Picture 1 (cartoon, rainbow, N blue to C red):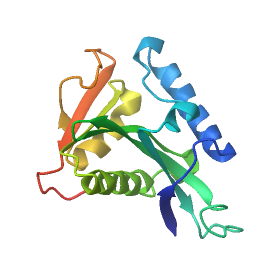
Picture 2 (cartoon, rainbow, N blue to C red):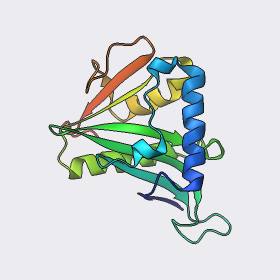
Picture 3 (cartoon, helix red, strand yellow):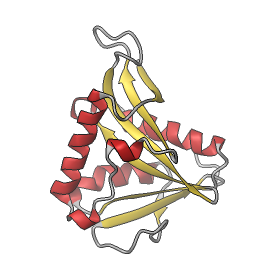
Length: 168
């Protein structure tokens, strides 16, 4: 069973996943176009961080020991908007719907906070095509840069209204 719950980005298994995420970001994008956050930044007060864990994995006894499948975060941008940060599915868990479950949970939290819109930045390279398809399936559409981002050919900016009634 996949369990989505708030978690600590400083946990050793989470740090390894985030280190892998950052390494991929720097391998596929110029440094000035990498906007992924490290574990310390993801622990900031304006950010809520979640993991997906397999609680049914051998030896797992719940969130504390479940096998890490992925992570994601929601940053409060103020003015009723949030930004999705650090969505990542572990290599061994890809194709199981982990990212869709994390995204649905993040959008539920954004609705609970009465956000009117959720935004994100992802890469424009082919490496990021699966992420762009995921977000498009969940109602995200291209938008201009937001929250201090600048136009960048290596970035794709997307947003979704939460008052549109679209399912996740």
